Image (cartoon, one colour):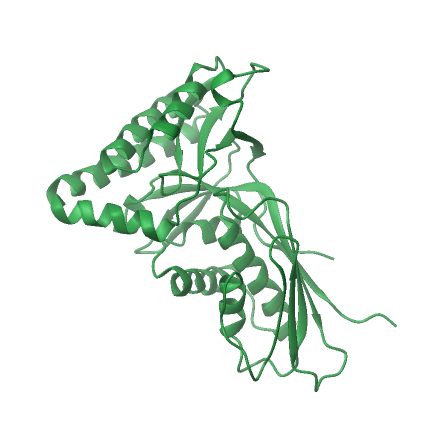
Length: 317
């Protein structure tokens, strides 16, 4: 006789517009993408067995017990998610993680693994499930681990699609549209909290200017929402290019990212290109598609062909 297991998958994500400003309660646009992290939870056969084992192709195995439970890297997000329900967990289990993309390329892997882990825990522990609760639990986990975070990537992993997001009052609205996107990994990742701290230090030196910059970024986001609803890719590309100029002003661009962005903009079927995420590394995104078989300025970079995932976190049979 087979034993019960619980499975969930959650998509990665890319920030489209609104980076940094979203932390100052401005609107942002974030998209779930068709690269997923899958989590399978298998309770121990003996209900008295309190051993917990985590198995991941990216990070190897980790073992502990309920009595010796603590949060350690590289499983900080997974273990923090588990810690939220320790009082409800009476027996151990094995957690098996499968990722369709590496954790170091800026595609929202932390949010995806957090969301999928919480999903299987909710299912196993029979917690009254709804997507809003899943989002709130996920956003709390990310902030506990990082010390900061808008929660936009969690919203994308939970709800899927292209999400209009704002912190207060909490706004999570899906746009029923799909965009042609391409992502290029820069070869370097700078931790989001580090970039956020650098930008915050600059903001403290020029609070009035940064207030205007964040308002300008939100204006880009609002204009982009209209362009997306009208399927106006030409306008949306122009808005993305303007937004990239604001990234420069925030100080999160560098020569590597700039060269990638301008290389993308040379492509005849790319409407616009910009940094995706906090900056100083990770990915740049282009709206449209690359038609040249060989783009000399991008040959040493990792090109990631992606599409918007309409689905967010889903349980897998």
